[in-house]
Amino acid sequence: MGQVISCQLSVISYQLSVIRFFYKTGALIVLLLFFIGSFNSSSAQVAPLSDQYLVNPFQANPAIAGTERYMPLNINTRQQWIGLNRAPSTQSISIHRRIRAKDIRFTPTGFINKGKNSFGRIGIGGGVFNYNYGAVSHTGVHLDYAYHVFVGNGRLAFGLAPVFFQYSLNKSGFTLPDGNNIDPLISNDPSESLLFLDVNAGMHYYDDVSYAGFSIIQLLNSTVQFGDLSFESLDQMSMNSDLARSMYAYYGRYITFNKDFSLEPSVWLKYNLQSGFRADANAIFHLQDTFQAGISYRLQESLGMLVGVKLDNLEIRYVFEVPVSAQVPNRYTSHQVMIRFNLGEPID
Image: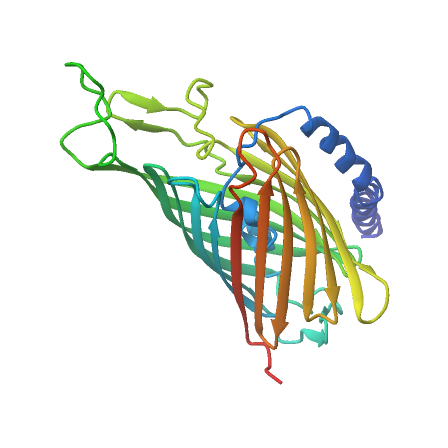
């Protein structure tokens, strides 16, 4: 019996040492990946829905399901490059919650864990989304499951989310080429649609002062084919990055200056099989848990500003972005609005 306990303690000690190593060297790893990402100069997005993590990180990692005290209902809309004809546009609604244990204990800022059974280990959630640009649109739904465990002073969650979506092509605005040759994409049908089942997966660590995680979006690396023309994620000629597998790694901290003022810096590293590496650096200032203001820089892509306000269980955030890449003129700005209701939070 003593040998078994000793073996278990050794395993736990090893796991904690790994977590501490990652925690202490996280900044170094992030800077290294940031440097690697700087070699890619393209300005395309990695994953349009997941890239909206500033207003809803749950969309970038299913393991985040159940990490918050209350049940957040998020309504997001983003219009990219206003003024550019048929530019990308995104709308989404999501919700998640934790299935709590009966003896969970709360503080004004969150929950306290006392004992291995003091909080629910399961998080659930889901959402619907619509993303369109030009003649292409994605409409779908995701269902999320996360399992939370203790790791030192924090919690580590593992998440999985099947994603079911429709990929559509609207050909009504296509222009026929001159001559007798007919474009193979244009037929008597005004539109074509295909249905897909994909999977998102991830892990997320969080404690009172920091968070870090890794996720894979569209793990199955879906492909599309309409008639004789195909867009395959593994075919470099097609460059269909919206369906290609994407990976996210991130690290953030909460730096408290006093009871009213804190700073939340974070770095996100992103990789898409088609569009390559990306890197984002963000800093959000929090005042009295009521007001937020921040800046965001997407490497060689855009510079953004964020403002937000929280009134009881209602939170509103607005993000404004200006392109900094030569590929997109800076007059085509992007705008994003998030409305969030923390269901279950008392209203003063």
